[in-house]
Image (cartoon, rainbow, N blue to C red; front, top):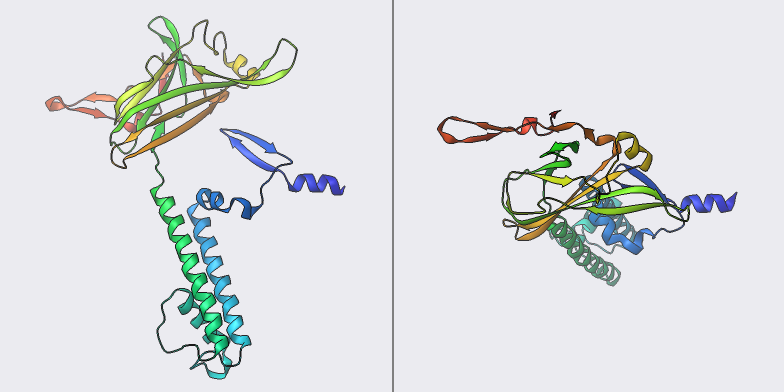
Length: 293
């Protein structure tokens, strides 16, 4: 019973697209990878964690002042709240001046707290800067990949768009399919294969881009219908990268689709309209729509 409980305590859930995989027997402690956790946490969780650390530090140093023999001036009746406020001033290096250390003990605790405050503020500044400066592509992917006949051949199509409408130079797209297979030895395996694209590069991605993969004898999707995809547990992975000319950084985006997302015999609805004066209108309200091919 204890060994089962110990194994369960080391389990974690890894999400790959719509699939959830339980990773058992390997788990880093919180402090062993704290920087990664700070970078991957959501903003509410990150801010809540920072506030918790701030409160704990100040509460702890407030107690240290409170244990001393009048270590801080202008504190009446050794009021803990006054020591707490003084700790906040010291940790944040604000120093309003109405309270100050007046004993060796008070100066020592203040010195330790000042070092802690400078160190923690430097770390927090670096983490916040890293989170804000982290590049993101802001690409919009269609809800469903579609498969229909195009130019006389069955073709897989995936539509994407640049939500920012800035230029992503030298954009490169790669398409992968993951599916279950049975090897010649009878072993069940999950393999991934890259799908060739009609065009896998875009010189300046600012609006929309549709990726085309011809399903022929060399394709990993050849002769697979909806039931075949379900049996093989097919997952499609789209990876797009390029150079964001505004951020002056390389950005990446990834989208996954499981077998239930594929639409057979469908194509994407046309989102381009001609307007007066020769202007072209793109209707993103129909971006995800599909119609019969």
